[in-house]
Length: 233
Ligand SMILES: *Cc1c(COP(=O)(O)O)cnc(C)c1O
Image (cartoon, rainbow, N blue to C red; front, top):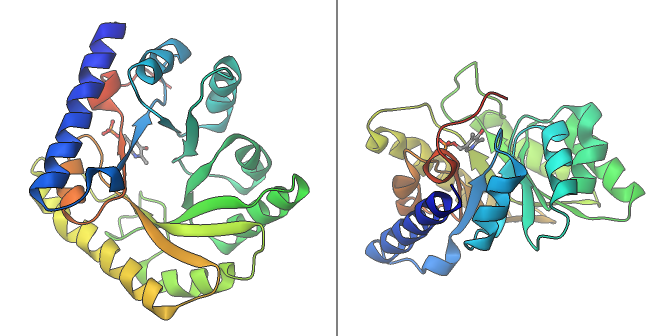
């Protein structure tokens, strides 16, 4: 099993590098978030020893258990799932980057909890580009307003945007959604809001990460292609 994870991880890292080069980007600009939700700590250990440096988790309780069990690993943890305000306290203690801030209420809760532990929490704002009701995230129209309001939160540092397009069998169909996120980030950067950086674009998963790299992704979130299909949560 360990060999299989290492092999898949290496294949993904090679594909990221190849894709970056083919569109004239520096492969070092693109970081892989190995999405380990539902997978046991042992699988994460295997991936880490094969070179994975960032792990993405979706559920606070599950992540807490695994992060404690893997305290000896020198890796970063990113939260990529929907975050409830009442879990903000745990999120700031556990994660280096939270990809899924989708309301001012959540941003304020994270700010408050981060200040209690003397941390400045790095976050991304999740944008629901497609407008699908099942997806979290602010609408593109709401994004600038949320960023402006977040600018005054001293214990939060916005690093960029994240999105999840609809699922398509043909990844090329996801391309317009990635492009829209990039344009929104450019627009936000040009607005020059204090304390708001737009250096990260978290987009692209197993089925569409290569298209996302073409559109400027700096963080690709890949689970299935590394760990196999998901266990039951
Ligand atoms: C599960 C998940 C992923 C990984 O999806 P795969 O298709 O398994 O690569 C990426 N991003 C988010 C937000 C997820 O919940």
